[in-house]
Each structure stands twice: as structure tokens, then as C-alpha cells.
Length: 256
Image (cartoon, rainbow, N blue to C red; front, side, top):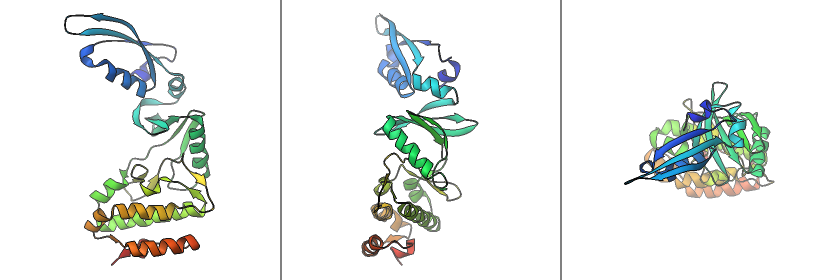
């Protein structure tokens, strides 16, 4: 199934013959997640199994993507979208497919932030999808567990720099209280952020104060690494930060 998209012409179809021992529902879910449409052409009962013949074709979205991408397969699903991964011009990419209003919002904010080093590059897009750069890194919570104090401190300071940059641009990202699927750390300690469909422009953005809540939630793990987020300092500096923007560093919210 994963190889079928590259083998199948946009106007063609495949026939898949298999036993009920293979699990029909699993096959149907796999096809749907990978944006194939399908129908049961025939089925026959035998003593201990049923034999199915499925006709499989590309959806219109998959036909459009197939013109530019290879090696496509299902990656993950969110509340408003499905993500596939694929290869675009020999580069790994993520394709987010969803409702037009959510995709158009994602595209708008990615374009607004295209010169910021923490956002992925857009490769191409249409009304129903956007194809962007894929980051090959470690999710932030895994990074906390696997890394030493010095490396974590570098990354936490970089995250604070990014959230303050978003605040300065008057963009509220909204996932900052629990961004465990949205922040990646690359091998050189670069921090990257994905998913911008929930962003809004705001005169009072809360990215930095929200990220403090995320740090506090992981305080036990950070303590084990020698980093103690001080709740009193967080409370005090959050209040000051709301009153007037100023540069915040990790040292401002931890206890020695």
C-alpha cells in the first residue's frame, strides 16, 4: 500500500485480493489514512474465512500531490488535519491536509514567519493542503529526558528567545502551555516549531507566559537534571512581563 502511490497512474486503479484473516477493517483504515478511496468489488465465503477483492484508486487530493511528491505515507492525525510525509525534490517533507479555513491560516502564518529561523519552509500549497519542510530532530520532552543540564539550558534559553520574538510580532500561537508535539530540537541545538493553524494576531500575546507553565509542568524532570524552575520567580516575572516587554533569560526563573 505504501508503494502503490508511486506505481499507480492518476487515472488507474489497483485490485487487492486478501483474506478476512488479514483484517478488512485494518486494510480499509490504512487506505483511508493514506488518501486512497476503495470499494469492495467481490467477496466469497469459505469454511474458515472470507475472500475480498478491493478496488483502490487515488483521491483527488492524492492525485494532485502525486504530481510533485514520492514516497508518501501516513504520518499522524490532528484535530483538524491529517499529516503525510513524502519526498519533494529529494527533500523530506510533511504534507498537512485539512479543511480550507485551517490550511489557509497555517499558510498565512508560515508566510508571515518565513524569515524566522524556527519555522519550516513552505514548498508548495493548494486550498486543501500545504507541503512544508520536515524537521529531523527530537521532540522537546524526549530531549529533556535524554540530555544533560548544559544542553537543556541552551535549548530552554532558545525557546524563550523564540516565544519573546512571537510576542514582539503580536502573534499568539496557543499551543505553548503543552507544546510537546510542536517543538523539535535538532542535532546542533537549533529549536524549530511547527503547527501554526491556531495562531492569531493579538495585542497581548501570551507565548512566553504560557511556556513558563510548560516548564513548570516538567519541573521534576528538569530538577533531576539540575535545573529548578522557581514558581515564585515565574509568578513575579510573568506579572512584570505583562506590564512591559523586556528580555527574559532562563536565569531569571530558576533557583541556583
